[in-house]
Length: 525
Image (cartoon, rainbow, N blue to C red):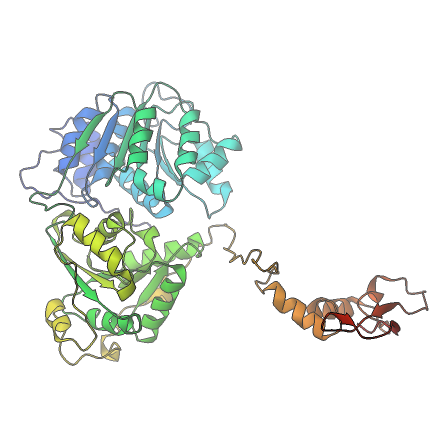
């Protein structure tokens, strides 16, 4: 099912129109059909500069429409199918994004803005089969949106040619730094034509990103845009609450928050994949319609969860920070930081999933005792004036008053309120990618893991109990052995005609001393 793209609406009623900013009539018509006529601050400042072909650095808070800030200028540069002088099918513009979810979101918004002209926008990312993406590249594409790993793979396989790229966009560049993609980004930049326009957009601008911009951008213009009346990094339309909680009581508190009056879609962030699964399982057991998103899920499962969340079949999405960038869903009213964010940037991007584009929202952060040092740094950096959050439990009175939770609710959702269809109502698409494998890897004690994920020490202990060898492998060899043939672990590889049993020597040691004589015993396996 095709999803309706969500393009944020402007905050200021007196914002200029896209037509006034110089966008072509076809783009204006496509945006009008999507309900967008006026621009955000970042769009107002960036579009006229970028349409001149100047390199650009755009910095703005999350949820302020950076996608159209570079998307409209890209649509002005590319030639659509059927237009005069339309070049070969190779991409004319490239947008590099750090995550699959952000890539899909950007591709949807650009396709919506270029729908009137028929501009072809292709998202490519890992975790799915190569063949459909290769076939789409051969048919032709004007704007390519991709993650660094899959872009490099297709380029090395000669399926992707970047010689026609006129404009490059690095979206959420600071997230690429966090994920360790800067080396891949530099390799991609080396494949592009020297004469091109380069734009870099991000919510924060750490020093490595500034260094990258100095290397690859030519005399860039820097544009900063913030929310009107914003205080530091905080969006004024998001109410932010912080509680010091105990790890064993967090689920009980969350269960109460999810029953608050007026709550819409809710995102819960956990630091680890295992934590995501645990929280999602607990909430599902308590009757809430919940889905999980993290890196160990296949791409089909991740897209299924996000579709169910966007379509309202589930109203709670538990995720790692992979979903804190680029996931723009209408109606997210609450964000819960189940684990304290690692740093101020992570806090900004997590809480930025609500209170977007002028809407109101609530962000709740749990701080455990061991996280107090980290939280004080975040609080001081963002100027929140809350270095000592109140110690809070699910029985604390202020929890109910702060979040408008009805008195008397329990830790389970009443059956009468379980009206969501649930994740099972959303069909998972077969995207052709390999299912994720949870690798155990070599252990520090010298043991390894087998292909089933069992620790090597476990396999050896079972084998030693049978006199040597892996017991599972021995049973498999017995099943393959012809009827009537028996023998030990080594007899399976010995010639059948050899009547002499294999023997081996055994020694018994006690306290490091050899206390037994050498004996020759038949191999019994």
